[in-house]
Image 1: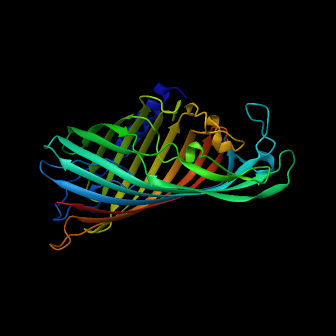
Image 2: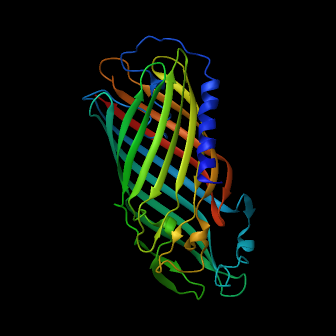
Amino acid sequence: MTFLNKIALSILIVKFILITNLYAHEDKIMSGGRPDGHAPIGVMGDHMHKKGEYMMSYRYMRMNMDGLLDGSDNVTESAALSYSRGDGTTHRVIPESMEMDMHMLGFMYGYNDNITLMGMVNFIEKDMTNHTYNMMGTTKVGKFSAHTSGFGDSSISSLIKLSNGKINSHISVGISLPTGSTSEEITALMPSGAYKVIRAPYGMQLGSGTYDVLLGYTISQTNKKFSWGAQIKYKSALDKHNGWHFGDKLEATSWVSYLLNEKLSTAIRMHAVNEGRIDGHDILITGRNPTQETSNYGGRSYNLGISLNMVGQNEKIRGHRIAIELLKPISQNLNGLQMEKGTSLILAYQKAW
């Protein structure tokens, strides 16, 4: 899919939401803000602030991977052993599962009524379980776990208002900073039976190592009982680090929220991702594990999310927000041989003043 086709698909998603908007009514203002005044918590940079307003947020996300896919087809571990690598050899170390925990701290400030500044830092923990086989056959040598943890990449962005009224819209322009490590090491079990310290695979690293441009467009509307929104985001590396960078990433998401009462809303969200393969390679990331090959990164996935937003309305807890979202893949078409992505859980707390 070309870049222009990606943009066209994203625009169609936005148009679909606009066409299905049937509830354009005025609504009373709630003292603590409407719970559906924010997007599902998995959507970043969905709203703006007035001049002088602040918001701090904490998000916790847990994501897991389990099993193998080649494109959209399931692959057994024994079948993965027969896959030919670029040099004609076959895989000898097969990933079984991976878990990632991410702690994200965010900050927003209304510079004026038309510009909101946003920053984010995060701490990441990754654990991957692998099975090692002997050099030629299908005899399992053993099982080992790999772990990395530390600060990931951070970001700073400006949200710039385009419209404010019945329909709100803004663009975002920012940069991702390479504050996460790309030289993490793990202790791996070799086909010979020996353990060796090696540079961790690309997916186990904590950062990208590159400065990335971040662009986005968000549109939303709040109605009497229903609210809706859509967002397009694009991320692209501006340079290479250690000879490589992650592929360009395009995301499109849309959501519809329903106001249950003045404190609680629920939402359903569609989320699509298209990410390119890694460009280049790190000469120190080598081995016979699919996660060590740059061709086994990126692809397309479509996810379905359900969420709850709860905001405080009385004087003591006004400005406080608690949110939860479950995001489940409904379709994946990945580049090469990769672990299948599982359900993500996002929990969050926000305070605005």
